[in-house]
Picture 1: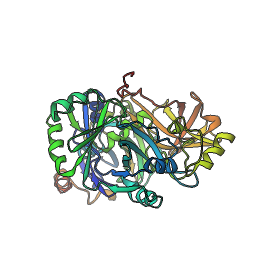
Picture 2 (picture 1 turned 180 degrees about the horizontal axis):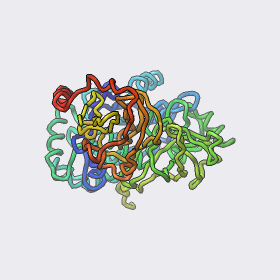
Picture 3 (picture 1 turned 180 degrees about the vertical axis):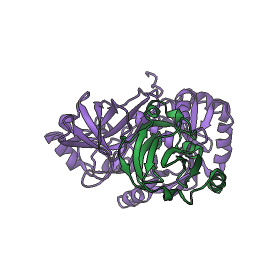
Picture 4 (picture 1 turned 120 degrees about the vertical axis):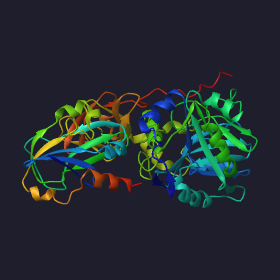
Length: 347
Length: 123
């Protein structure tokens, strides 16, 4: 067990990180992510509030659609990343990182207008079911038919809210439910032969293979969404009339100095967070690793971090300096492993 | 020949002034799935408590500390490509042989019985 954002969380269950990782990619893993913050933000100006506090568009988001976006500070850094789902015309369901809950709440509350209210769902648990068998498990263990639910879509189900998304790159769901129902749900899921519980260790290696940023590591209050290479969250939005927009406008016109990139080590070793990156001649420091570890799928050490943009091109050779030893590596486009999230049917 | 154990979960086989050093089953299990072992150079001088190797698991990097001072006279380089051999096996699982400069450092280390008892108090 480890303390994580004030919660006691298992790093791994008895089978270990490697086994849990492979199991999730081949079957279904369940993750207790109840430590994450869950809110309802509602009112006639709710979408306007999100368009002020994030770089994404919300006024045209269809009912039942989830969006990945970020809260930005006035300097254009990232306060947190989050999922915002339209659950009714004027109501949004928000999931934020556990470690950011308090500051996110203070930030959003300080920007509330008379026509928006925020409710914290303190008594709400969150269980993620991830893996190619997730849909089957939902049906067989919980008697919930999700076959018509597409990726990044949401549905109401009795006392639950079910979103088809996750942090592993696999097909899967996050089920928000009253805490009092969660033990029964967890145990029913666990009793399914395709299901194993997954700890924080494999949660991290699974998301690392997908190139998903982890707040406080790969993105923080100094990194902009463009540097973090998540500029796609702006969608078709052209204006920069939102908190932090000035920096994005500047970065769009004058370009980036650094950008998030993936790295794959081409010699034995592992390069973890904090590892400095050097040019191939070992002379110039050109970046830093913000997340790194071992990819069970690729059987290789992978990492992500920020690198000077002239070195950010796919295939560029670099060195990761680990305990004084330079390990050869190359810049690799993210993700490292192709995601298998359910493709939305063409409508 | 005697085998000693440390609270840092190393075992040490002593013959004369030479110590074979490895890690215990408990340590091996706690480290989880190993992916890389960084070994020292032969000839390096080490002081008691200094790390001489680093083992990388999927979870984290962990340093391995020497319980005795001296000079590394041999490195079990085959371990790098056979990580499963890094275990509590005094024949094949040793990481380095150290020629001790201060053999009295071995005093007060645990024997197998005392170590097993120590491990049973953990977790």
